[in-house]
Image 1 (cartoon, each protein chain N blue to C red):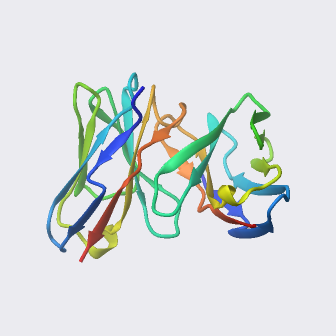
Image 2 (image 1 turned 90 degrees about the vertical axis):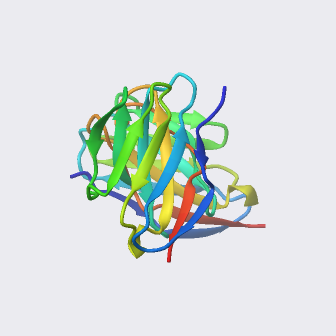
Length: 111
Length: 114
């Protein structure tokens, strides 16, 4: 069974700092990896999707990388802002009909 | 383009009751997946509906059941509610099976079981 781990569980940084969130998974036979943002008590907003054949994806200040062989992905956030404060979840598409989630990293950006 | 919508937003039930949650998929999507998210945890896959049939199920008992309609909207039904069923229930739609396609999530339904 696919296991997804996110480190750290919580992170607090001053505004303007660059930061990296980590995601690891146990089974490298994946279709894709998706990063989501979740605000407290809300649904999930898709940030980036990386297909298994890709190495990275970029959207604005966000860059996600994927190393399938080592079972790792990172989400890089440049020049963090207070509005970036949220929980970030990674999810691995593994098997035709399932998405496996990590427990998330709770990010706080201090003004 | 309309995104994924869910109803109701919040729901309070007592133990032993039954509940039905609803989800409308994004335009052009034929697959709906349901997830349960307990407080402080990542979402857990309940099941997926593809072209009106269940196509994959997570580790949830049979009292969790669902339907998908010809317009690809979906219902999640939970019978004999237990206190541990209290959670945020998320619906996601995709243009194809959940594991291989990008998922788009609704805002969720917060269920509280007393």
